[in-house]
Image 1 (cartoon, protein in one colour):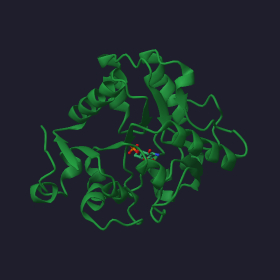
Image 2 (image 1 turned 120 degrees about the horizontal axis):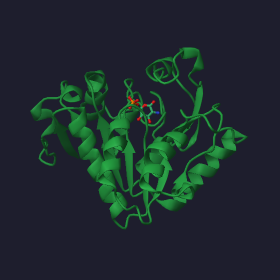
Image 3 (image 1 turned 180 degrees about the vertical axis):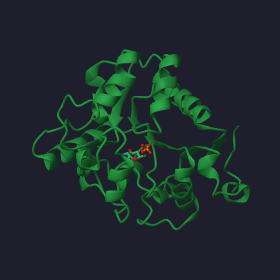
Image 4 (image 1 turned 30 degrees about the vertical axis):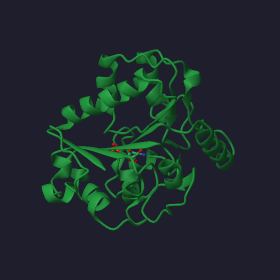
Length: 249
Ligand code: GLP
C-alpha cells in the first residue's frame, strides 16, 4: 500500500487531481469516480489542470435513488457539471445507473455488467465516517456486487449538507459492491478532515472485516491512500511505514 500524507485539504485535492489528470491524459480506458465533499475540491483543481481525456470513460461509484433526473444533487449530474462539461467530456462517456430508471434492481444489475465489461483502470474512493466505501455500509459482504442499498441514518445525516433537511436525503442508493470495487486495477482512497480519522485508522490498521467496509482495500494489491494530516491523526508513522508505504508532503 502506498500512503501519501499531505498538509491539508487543498494539498490533497491538488495531489489527487494530478493523479486523475494523469489517467485522463494517458491511454487508460476507464476511471471510476467518487463524489461527495472530499472530491469537490479535487474536481475544482482538475479543471485548472485541463487534461485531454481523449478516450477515457468515466464510471460512477454510486448514485442516489429517488431524485429527479435533472436534480443537481444526483452524482451523475454532479460529475456532468463538475468534470465532464469543464473538461469537454461527452455525455456518452459518463456511465452510471440513471435515476428513476425502473426497476432499480435491474438498473443495478445492468450497471454491474457494464463495469465488469469495461474493467476499471483506476477507482477513486472516499470513506464514510462509519467506514463505508461507495454506499457499502458496515456489515456488507466483501463478495457484494452492484446493487440497491438502504442508507444508514448516520450516512444520511452525513450527507444532509446539500439537501438541507434529513427527511430530504434519499433513503436508498445504487452502489458498486465491495467485490466490484476490488476488481479495479488500482484503488485510490482519499480521506480529508479530522472527522475521517477514526474511520481511516480502522480501515488501515483494524481488522479486515465487513464491519469496516473500507478495510477491504487491504485485500487489493495496488492501493494508494491519500490523506491530509487531520485525517491521519490516529495513525502513527510506525503504523503506516511497513516498508512499502511512502509519505509524501
Ligand atoms: C458518501 C458517498 C461516497 C463518498 C463517501 C464520503 O456517502 N456515497 O461515495 O466517497 O460517502 O463522502 P464525503 O466525501 O462527502 O465525506
